[in-house]
Length: 47
Image 1 (cartoon, rainbow, N blue to C red):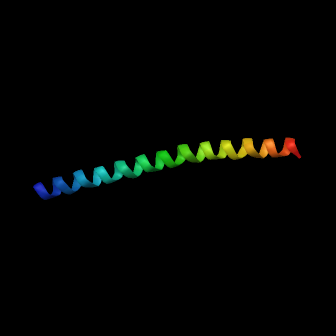
Image 2 (cartoon, helix red, strand yellow; image 1 turned 90 degrees about the vertical axis):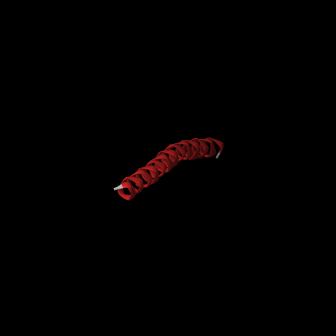
């Protein structure tokens, strides 16, 4: 019984870290998109 509980806890921890990584990736992806869009806009105005 204890082993089952332990594996559930470790799976939950893994799921949390995966979710956290995914959320971080999404945030950085949005920031990167904004940066690229701004840079492209600047390049267009310079040309």
